[in-house]
Length: 150
Image (cartoon, rainbow, N blue to C red; front, side):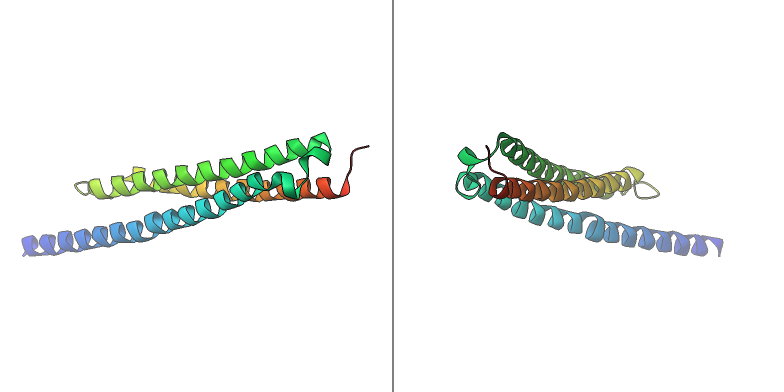
């Protein structure tokens, strides 16, 4: 009788662990990866557009010298955003790898949860760098259109 209850309990525990792993892979892995991929596409498009048309839109030759520094800072922030999105993708993949390959353990690995949180923090940092890059780009546009060198 006790043997049957132990088998039922272990069966329920295995089902719960499987459900936990599936939820982790669906939400902690797939969603951040999709968000990071879309962010990389948007940020790289904005970066390429601003680099290609900076001389035509901003008029680098007629702008004050500080405009160049603001524009370079904007591009640096956008590059940091792309870098952190890529880092988030790799950390999310590693967290899924630990979750899948840790199936012989009693509980799903803690390392996968830790990596997933770190990936989410990297994605948040990428968003902050993106906003800073856009703000610097707007400031540079304002500088080039309003402030003229003497």
